[in-house]
Length: 92
Image 1 (tube, one colour):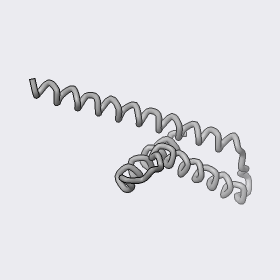
Image 2 (cartoon, rainbow, N blue to C red):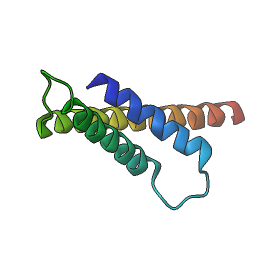
Image 3 (cartoon, one colour):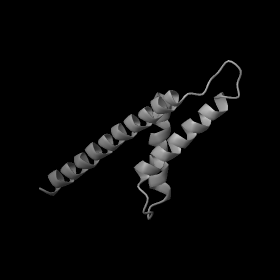
């Protein structure tokens, strides 16, 4: 779960840095990228003896991605608010 949270956070960050003028939301794009990776990981596991592919694993991975993105967005919002507040303080 933590791995997929990190993958989603890093995907969102790279999307923001790379595609500055796109109409696609970086958060949605990062979630979809992470979801596709989770699906491909489960598909790969279906070929390995002793392992099985389950949709519940994909759901857990998707939940990890969603939590990671939510935390990332909250931290970014707090950081932006703190920067604006510090700029206002310097102007006074």
